[in-house]
Structures are given as structure tokens and as C-alpha cells.
Length: 238
Image (cartoon, rainbow, N blue to C red; front, side, top):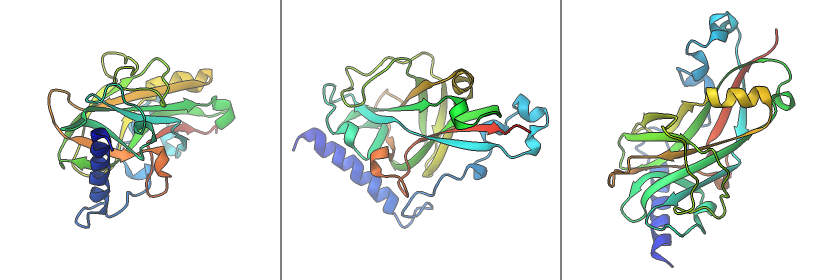
């Protein structure tokens, strides 16, 4: 077995141990996504629709399953086999694998196939952070990936370019659980004008070994191992 695979297995075991830690507030499994319990939701932050009085009604949430997810590692620039088949995703930095970046992509269907009528309110990407090393804050950057890539062949050297500056920068804390960032502006055009692909890349600081965050990939099977999800909120026609 290659040193690379030993490193990946070690990261996976670290994530599993974090999930199984009896002393952690999240318990042995990650709770399901509870949209109403994550204030402030991006669609409750002064959007004009809410200002016009629509906040008197509850929005409808559409959960768009992830289409593609993988990660790349700087210490193995030509490797891709196994990474795209792992049940876990990592971003940040690791002593053995180097810098870690996670690539995520969703296909946004035409709004008329999902919700005829209705007013778009907002959209956000939700990340089920399920493991980490160490248990500390990680400054995270989310970048838009404007070009297509193949998750089954992408590696560190062939990863697609990203748009600069980052979409946003935020901190993921030491508590495991769901974290989100808004992609309202990006999804709004797709919602109103047809099919579109939304792809983002997650990075931690890349100035040294600063730790990493881990989350389940779609290959983990869902259930108590949820994958990242895109959520679209809209108000139904009155």
C-alpha cells in the first residue's frame, strides 16, 4: 500500500474517531440538516422580499443533492485514484498530504421543473463538518470554479482555476455540525434563467500545517453521514 493511501486512511480514521467520541457534544452521528434552527439564515438577513412583508410566510426549502465531490492534495500532485472514491472530503493542511482542497459541484435545475411560480429568496451551501484535527478554528475560503472539471481524473496539477477574489471567507469553529455560506447572487441568475452548474472550492490557510476539517462525501451513503447540500429558498405564489 502506498504512503499516500496510508495518509488518506489515517485522515479517515481521525474523522471516524471524531464522530465516535463520546465526549463530543454532537454524539456518534451528525444530526440531520435542520434549516429552521440555523439562525441567521441567509434568507432572513434583510432581503427585499422579506422587507416587503413576505416574512409573514414560511419559505419553502429545496435541497439540491450534490452532483460531484472530491478533494486534491498538494503532496500527491499526479494522484487522483481513490481520492474521488473516498467517503470523506478534507480541506486545510495535513503533514503527510500537504494542502487539501475540496471541490463541490451541483446542477441547478430549471426553476419551472422544481417550483412553478414563486419568488426566489436566497440560497446557501451547507457543510456537514464531521471531523477535524485539531479541534480549533479554521479560516476557510470558498472560491467559485467557473470551468468544468472531471471529478474522476482531477488532481492537484489539473485542478480547475478559480475566480478571484474568493466568494467569501469565514471561520469554521471547533464544534462539529452544520456550517453554511450564502450563494444567493450566484444561484439567483440560474433560478430565473434555466439550468446551470454551481461549483465551488474550499481551502484553508496554505502557509503551513494549520489543521484540517473533514466531512462526509456522497459516497458515504447519506443518512447519518450527510453530504454537503445546496439549499434554495423561495416564497410560493400567494
